[in-house]
Each structure stands twice: as structure tokens, then as C-alpha cells.
Image 1 (cartoon, rainbow, N blue to C red):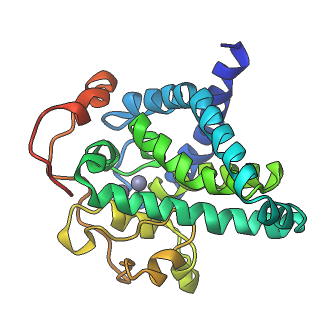
Image 2 (cartoon, rainbow, N blue to C red):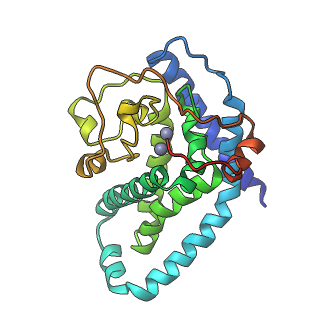
Image 3 (tube, rainbow, N blue to C red):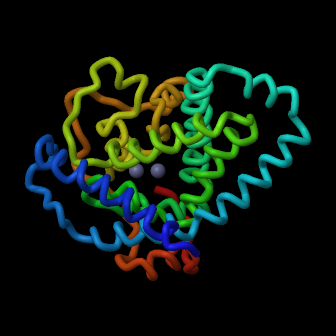
Length: 261
Ligand SMILES: [Zn+2]
Ligand SMILES: [Zn+2]
């Protein structure tokens, strides 16, 4: 493994920290929340390890999807690759996030998938680092469901890179402890307020707000929950999820009754 492959996630992490730590200090929703809250080291470590673990596996899987689509849908691929780049970027956001919506909804409905996704929902304090708290299998499925269709459609590499960059930024932003108002645009774009409801421990928001970029997907499929002027009273889930990286990695495989959020 080359050294640059190790340092790429470190660089991304430092950049995100340089933006989001001051951002949360300036525009914090929960003012009393600490920067170094409980579990921050494990979340940070999870982000780095996921970056390293998934890079090669994802490249291999996406290569396979590309080869299969080239054999089965060459005309559609040719039409798409001749569209202007801005149109391809827009298509990448809309189609990629539809993939996220689909797999995320499945993760909340299929009990064995929920076991992996529960790791993400175990966060009881919301901040940008929660954007890293994913079991590797959960993150792998989300990446395949979102990037797979983009590769299959043969979108240009800059359009796919645009989707990856926006998704990374969004993953930190929607979990961040920040107060930002989107106005009427909150029905179209996923805001921190929108995703905080997805993490609510309360029953009213259970299994709502699955999208990560395009809130419109939840509006279209009837799973949106955005009550104005209120915010969740608490975050997290009832089932206990262990704290350390190793314990969390093996948590989904433990024998126990199948439950959902
Ligand atoms: Zn979820
Ligand atoms: Zn989340």
C-alpha cells in the first residue's frame, strides 16, 4: 500500500476539522456540546480505517459493474457520455442520491442490514465526526448503491468526482452541530435540521428523511419529516452499541433477537 494512499484520508480529515471545528463554535446549535465529546477518537479512527479498507474493494467492485454495464447498455452509455459536463454533474447528484435513498431505506427495513446501520445511529451527540461513524459494510453498501449507477451509466470521471466531493462535504455538514436555516429550500436540499430528525430518538421521526443530498426524494416517496420551529429532544437508539472500534466492528455479528430502530 503506497504512503499516499494512507495520507489521503488524513489530509481530508484535517481539512474537514479545519472547517467544521470553528464552524460549530461559531454557529453551534447545542452550545454546551464539547469539541472533544465522548467517543470522538473512535469516530475519527473509524473514518481513517474505512477510507483505507474500502478504497481497493470499491475500485474492484465498481470495475466489475462498469464491465457488465458496457456489455449490456452501450447505447445508453454513449448517449450519456456525450451530454455536457454540467448536465452530467446534476445527473450524478440526483441519481447517486436516489441510490443512497434506496439502500438507506432498506437498511432501516431489513433487520440484518439494520444491525450494521445501527452503529451509525448509536450517536447520542451530533457533530461533524458522526459523518465518519459507519460500519465498513454499511459504508460499502452505500457507496456501491450510489457510485454503482453512476459508473454503470458511464458518467464522466469529473462528474463522478463532483458527486464524491459533494457527498463528503454533505456527510460532515448534515451531522454538524450547526444552526443554519435553508428556508423553503429545506424541501429540496438535505439540511442539518433534516438529518438531525433522522437521528432523533423520538418515535415521530422514526424511519424518515433517508436522502443525503436531495430532500426531494423523501418528499416524492412520502418519508419526509420536517416540523418547523422544533428540534429533536434527544438522539440515538434504544439498543446499546459498544464504544471501541473492534467491539463496534463485531457488534452486528453477535447473536441476538432481530430488531429495528
Ligand atoms: Zn439511517
Ligand atoms: Zn446520519
